[in-house]
Amino acid sequence: MQAVVLAAGEGTRLRPLTEDKPKGMVEITGQPILTHCFDQLVDLGADELVVVVGYLKEKIIDHYGDEYRGVPITYTHQREQQGLAHALLTVEDHIDDDFMLILGDNVFQANLEDVVRRQREERADAAFLVEEVPWEEASRYGVCDTNKYGEITDVVEKPDDPPSNLVMTGFYTFTPAIFHACHLVQPSDRGEYEISEAIDLLIQSGRTIDAIGLEGWRIDVGYPEDRDEAERRLQDADATIEAPSD
Image (cartoon, rainbow, N blue to C red; front, top):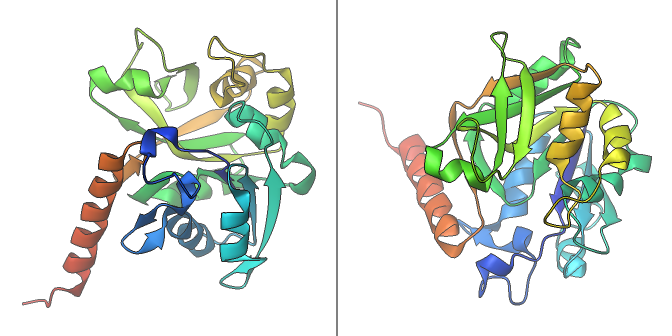
């Protein structure tokens, strides 16, 4: 399965960490965020990494070159930051089957393999890792509603009045049908082409999208304090692994 990594962001909220590098190259435990993403995707069986670059793209390309741990890397360029659906369309010509999608500013210690397994069952057109967050934080994310079967019935991007506290994380699997939906998306009030709108179009067309509950944790590295928290959690996880058993 191919894996798409969205890594075109400038990371203005992460300043000063991103003054001379793109967001995905900010280091956590001595490695860029993208290295953590790439490792997980390769461990999940990715046979190609398709990386969307933009801001200071040469920093990413020069660092990783044309392969990572033996897996080839293809780069596409998002010339203007116009939203995730816009970024995803830059990879359309490179994707030929179901694929994984990860946001290159998210750090996971979670059950990503459950999402991939569900996609391979071929009962759904897409699957997402979702988590419950405090209600006051839900408006920062794409908020989901689900039915009794665990299928997503509605997605709203960063709503002022969230209909639930169940939100999309930064890991998804899709069929190529998502590209047709992305072509139909209109700019949001923020002036961006939102992936949540593309997902909603899939739902309206009768496609099945499964929600997989997060087991573990993930951090969306949007601010310097998020980077610090991700580093603390990864260090704690490493210390637990290295601790001798009784």
